[in-house]
Length: 106
Image 1 (cartoon, one colour):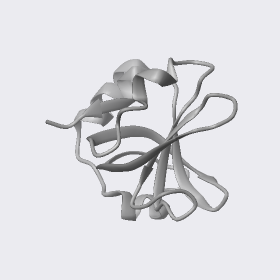
Image 2 (cartoon, helix red, strand yellow):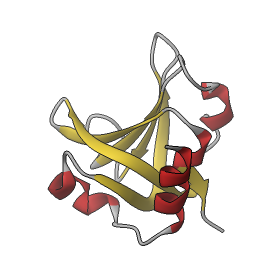
Image 3 (cartoon, one colour):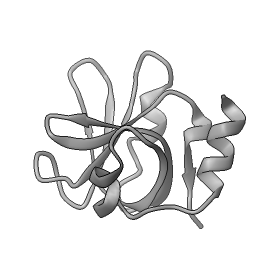
């Protein structure tokens, strides 16, 4: 599975605005993180296109599988996020469970 995400993260990407069209699909989304929110349980949400609840796409870093503190300084950074697009409160989201799913864009 790790190699799948590595290939996806380095492959062709869609902009955050198109993520909602790909719910249920595994894709790579590339964009600039608008802001970062930390939930009460420690999960980190990288929001694209606006602050929650006005974001157009989010990547959620689970505190159960990764160290969310590694991602709190991502505001303003350009990243590629790979994984299955899900809906969370009506907004498209990818859950990050492996470091191979997120790549900083130079």
